[in-house]
Amino acid sequence: MLESSRIGIPEPGRRDALVRVGAAAVHIGDYFVLTGEPYVLRLVFGLRRPRHGIPGRDLAGVVAAVGTDVTACRPGDEVFGWSTTGTLAEYACVPADHLVPVPADLSVVEAAAVPTSGLTALQALRDIADVRPGQSVLITGASGGVGSFAVQIATAFGAEVTAVCSTRNVDLVRSLGADHVVDYTQTDVARTGQRYDVVLDNVEAQPLAAIRRALAPTGTLIPNSGRGGRVLGPLPRIVTARVLSGFTRQRLKPLVSVEKRQDLLTLADLIATGQVTPLIDRTYPLDEAADALRYVGAGHTRGKVVVTL
Image (cartoon, rainbow, N blue to C red; front, side):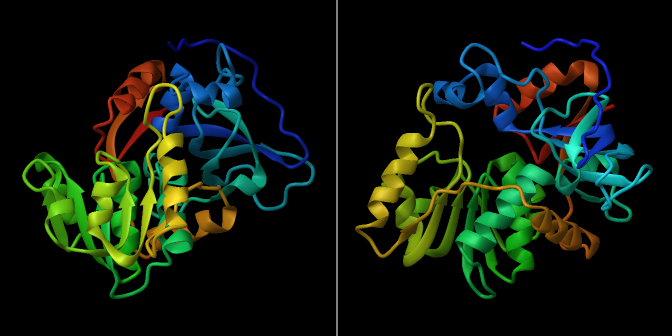
């Protein structure tokens, strides 16, 4: 599945920074690309094997060198951000505008956990749902990578947050700031009669028709799971959501998260002010990165999984 190998240290381009990686988070998308399922991903990332030999997207570390046109960071700076050419390596070349300073008192492991999941949660709640103080927000998969950020961000926005998780995670999710916690093994949140202004569905364990019963008549539902079937993954659900949006006052808005430096700075501010704290499930050394990916692929993480170097 994944093997360690030695390659040369990459040379930064004019607008790049060479980062000595201290930690790299892995998420479910990394697992999908590596395994080639759902199969539709192979059209983008490689038919027979991933086009990029190094997996991983999120990282934190220290700038080792910069290109001639880089002014935003310099050697010795502690930074975190994202790369499209792999982060599960001792060094990674990253466009400098994909990096921001690590907030004070944040560990390198915590910083690496932020980019993909934090940006997804922020953009879902702020840009798509436009969450405002006093609104009711339901978050499924609340103990996972995106969910744990979403609970904290929605709380920071002043929403009344109801979080859905398993029995073992109830206390954990409550500690993240959720106003109400629903144990899905005991209660079907779609059948409680409660309606929410926003539903961020990170698990998609129920059909759209079922989860819409928990949505207010003019509320916003954001389907956000990459699983689905082995061939098309979440595409059928995404298409169905878009079609249904044309026939109902409810807004069904699938999420396409886009990494933006300014949004990463926003997350850094939320972290620096104590409103958001990355939740770390496990860490693995680099030579056990395959185990980290398998663990994430099993789908029961509590927060983020991080590989340390």
